[in-house]
Amino acid sequence: MSHALKQDFLPLAYSDWPAANADLPWLVLLHGWGTDSSAWESCRAWQEHFRVRTIDLPGFGDSAVSAWPGIALLLAQLEELLPERCTLIGWSMGGQIATLLAKQCPQQVERLVLVASNPHFLAVDHWPGMDADTAATFRNLMEGKGVAGLKRFAMLVAHGDLRERHVMETLHAHSRQAPDEKALLASLGALESLDTRDALKSLPMPVLHLLGEADQLVPASLAKTLRREYPKHAVQVLPALAHAPFISDPQAVFNALHDHERKHAVAQRFSHASGDYDAAAGVQQKVIQQMLQVMPALQG
Image (cartoon, rainbow, N blue to C red):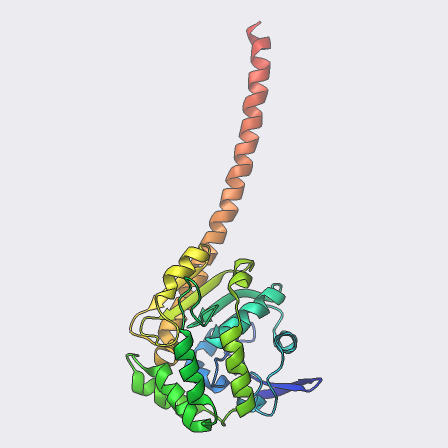
């Protein structure tokens, strides 16, 4: 079922997949640059475990009629589409936007999952990423090339993956329509300029970073930096997968989601138990102090 939300000049299209059970938890999916929500079609099996909502970012898919807005307006529009509580998954540029959305709506986002997403897409200082010369070449390949440019991009997304041809063919097959060219370039500018590194440090919810070992756009070496900068976050590198691991192996990505949820649940139970132990220890200390106070009187 597809819908469109309109506020001011910005309509955003979204789709709710048929769910196996109305009581299942919500999963909201944000696609990456140069694609639309149909990129998630390989993950249809997830609807057995979640209520799934996919959103087309402005200029892409069924939101193609919309211009790319400023980030504040975009976040406001996305906030309107968030369920009361959900796991939010962002792929590539969608991960940067998802991070800012989670910061803005922590009461609605109970878990954040970033797939093949670099908080700072371009390399800077000691932060791994795409170097400036490659980024400039990439932009030149996209400008004025339309569908031909996106086909080249699909090749980059798929390159090195264990199922490279499958990923490339899937991206071509599922794309509903060519994105608006102005939105394409404007969103590319957002991808290159967004910096969500500080925002990630302030998030209260559990965060999982999933990287592809063979990714040509977001280096797997980023994992070491993420573990250093965000020690409370979970970071996993998926072997033999590239920039679209959920297309190549949706089950591997689902398994990572499930394992992360299970480990977080165990950690929460341990934390609650630890609190009970601390409370019991406090009572025990008070009892010991009271006993020590009355002992001199007993001895006398």
